[in-house]
Amino acid sequence: MTGSPRTELAAFLRSRRRQVEPASVGLPGHGARRAPGLRREEVALLSGVSHTWYTWLEQGRDISPSRQVVDAVARTLQLSPAEHEYVLRLTGHAATAPAEPGPAELPAHAVRLLDALGPSPAFVLTHSWSILGWNTAYERLYPGVATAPEGERNLLWVVFTDPAVRSLLGDWATDSRRFLTQFRAEVGRRVHDPAVVDLVTRLQGASEHFRAGWASHDVDSFSSSERRFEHPRVGSLLLEHHQLTLADSPDLHLVVYTAAAGTDSAARLARLSSD
Image 1 (cartoon, helix red, strand yellow):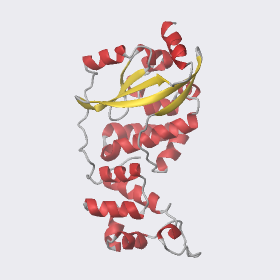
Image 2 (image 1 turned 120 degrees about the horizontal axis):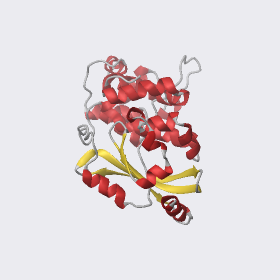
Image 3 (image 1 turned 30 degrees about the vertical axis):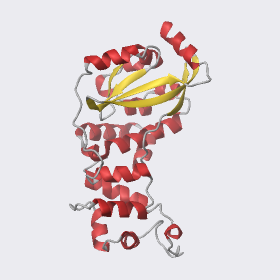
Image 4 (image 1 turned 45 degrees about the horizontal axis):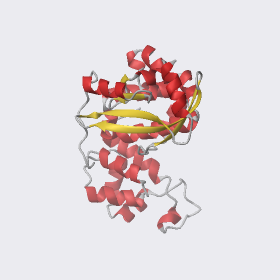
């Protein structure tokens, strides 16, 4: 279950601290260690803060760490760039302030943009990854988007609960995990938002795989990459996955799949659109 940014920060720091090998920061392993990773006092010492103050951070106390302290803790815990950015968001030091919740309906110009993408499957996500709109090509790739109840028309929900999506994704185990870690990175300080809390709570009850992945506290940033789909009508599709932010609606993200170069996926997409 999600909580406030402070409780999420506390759980995240604990999970990352346990993953750091003492030898990697110049400390002896000590065979007598009762738990993996670093001790709290070691993180505090290496980060230049008091043991008590760092303990308060891991307890979710109402304190406000400076950007300098956050950066120091991130270095000590050997956080990846995506993890570092996640902690910055949780502590209110992100480069940009969180956007306000997006519109309840897709703007007309965004609908026209989706339609103009032709055979490239595309859809628009809200901050909680609800699917707000899509084009014909996406509906033909995944027909369930049009028939799903509004409360279940959410990318993370369908990835973890819809058997059709599990069959459609060529590498469901890897893709679903990537979706989860990117979602967690994106929600950042909105981890306590009612829509996010409701989604995570329902998914924890519906999917063992999601429950285990969420408990890991892993985060990762989005990067354009290839994704394989196994479509029942046109066969294997290798598509590049892109994500764009609408400049006049920064809380809405346009997701577009285009045919990977050097494949026959473009012809297969065209056939899917013409059937």
